Length: 322
Length: 295
Image (cartoon, rainbow over all chains, first blue to last red; front, side):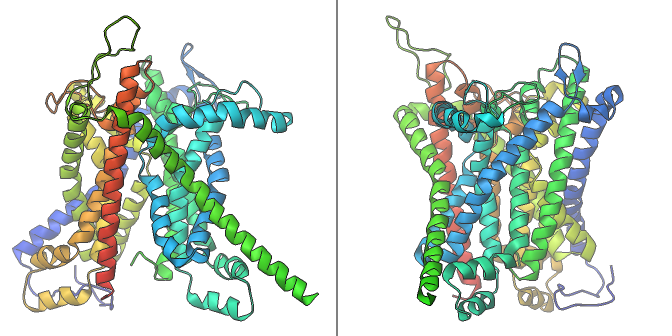
């Protein structure tokens, strides 16, 4: 472990003979560090191992299979995967503007005394447990969707074909709305961080050119923070993709590809929550695990992309991470 | 003409400020509604008995019959304390060790790899943590698949990366001059790390641990097929155990009136606990930041 160079950021390097205490301590913390790396490999490994039976039975057809048919033991991931993707898309569609709007408001527009407290309260949205949101949706959001929002959507947008069928309040759309509420704090908090990390010179330059408050934000600050906001959004997407309890309680839990926003559906996580412990046989069990593996791989991909973007933004500009 | 354009730009600017403010306002409505709903439906059932008694048999009031047993959420509170306590005992040493390794012993690549992996792990869906522990125990120890032990393990899978990341950030805020001073006095590196670096960063480390505890306390998904839930109190680490989020999930969709009001009470307790913890952690962080800036 000798190091050829010593850069200013390094902890000082000892070159004296090692002491046993140091050696043991290094080994102990090393085990913890390696443990984190092993953990992710173990998760992927065991899911791959357990989905082998399903993979042998359906091959790549599992990914394009539109049936989740317990009676005939035929499984494809499309019903659940499409539910996951559609609800997450709805979540971003509704959540993104609200999150960015409030992030911009709290970093550039709001009076200074308001910024801290309101920001804290918005982040508390993230602290409310998923299952509480689900419970709330059963009593407040679901009935509201059924009696007010969905009939209105049907009346004005029914011609698109996406808003047909009985308005039940437990469907793809409601699940998407509850997810939107849950991704707002994630997107908003990290966007605020990247907006706050924009150097003041950007703002001063815009103002000195005679830009209004909004023009300064729009042309001076937001473009500078663009990739951070993008990273924050992808991170929010990651949260929406894997969310379980609130979705399970609002989506209706039906194993079919949704045909409208009012269809009862299933996401991969709600599928796992509903069927893993009462599967009808080893093949269904294995298929559920394979669906879980697909969810894991998607969320790993999404998180890797988001983190790479955010690490670059926040480290380079000396933001809050160091 | 010129005046008009300037006025229009100013008007536009004000409009956008109002719109952005509206976004913040709309974002707050759900939180207000959740708290209001939990307080209205959960508030009336709160009592000392509610916190200690175990959940009753399912029952809905029928005219002419004796009233339903109210019961309480004692077993769920006890279960959450045990599960989260055990998960904390497992994940804090591992997470803290990983953070120390990544910050104090970083070979360039390995340290970065650990930070990055922990970051990515925090984004792994919590239900996958449950599936991971469940499948592992189904293969190797099927007898105790549904138990307090597996529940705590599933929660630690969620907690470890959070502890690692937050402790890492905390350790990084400790100035290098402190480490150098300690080492220059001939103090071994392990004592420098434990008694100087970790102690200096302790408030932030504790905040990180508190954050992970809050997160674990609210998770139901990983417990669905590990802790499983039970109306009884603690029956040993090898038996199913209850937890607040599990109780809410299991009772919320039941048709029984007394179970549903218990679930609302449990939701209120959970929200109160988590809001207190999050305000507390924010206060500590703010104080830390102020101190670090030499204020």
